Image (tube, rainbow, N blue to C red; front, side, top):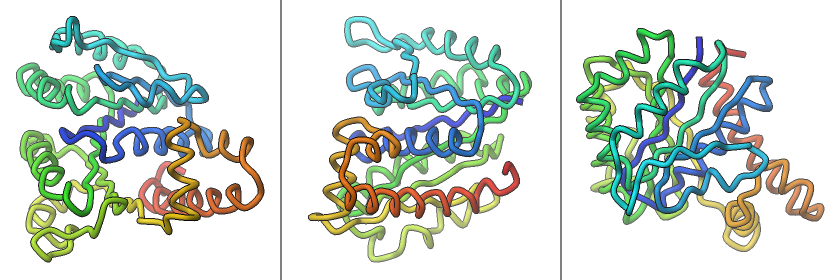
Length: 244
C-alpha cells in the first residue's frame, strides 16, 4: 500500500520543511520509493530541495486558498504505486483550509479505504513558540480522534527548552490521552551555535540535503552534519523498525 506522511502545523517558521525533507531523505536512504509534494502557497521551501525532485501543488489563486485544489492531491495519492512513501508538506497558511477540507470530505477515511496508510507529522517548537505549536497539535489530534491516525511528533529545541508551563512537553496530559496513536517522538536538538548550529543553518538556508551538504562542504562541517544525520536516523530507525 502507499504511505502518506503529511506534515501539518499552523505556526510557520518552526521547522516543518526541515522535518519533511529529513523524512524524505531517510526513506530514500532506506531504499524506499519516495515522492515529495509541497503545497505551501507563499514559501514552498520543500520544493527548493532540488535533490528531492519535489512536485508543487498550487492551492491558491490571488492569495486565496481554494479547497477544491486538494482534490488534485487526493487523485495523486490514489494513483501512486504500492509501497511509495509520499511526503506532503502543507504550508502553515494552508493548515486551516486543509483541516476543514479533511473534516468536510472525510478525507483520511476515504484515503484509507483506497489503501493509503496515512501518517500525520507535526512539529512542536520549544521556547516562545511552544504554546502556539501545542495548540495546533492539539487541534490536529482532536480532529482526527475517531480515526486514531498514527502521528509522529517532532520536537524542535532550536528556539528554546521543550517545556510548557514548566512541564516537559512529552509529559503533558494531551499526549497521555492520545498515547495509543503516537507513532513516536523525534527530537531536533539545539546545537552549539558556532559549530553544529551554523552547519545546520547553512544546510537549511541553501536547501541542501545531507548528501548535498557532504558534497559541498569541507571536512569538519561534513563530519558534524554526518553526526547530526546519524542521530536523526537512529531515532527514525527505532520508530520504523517494522518497515526495515
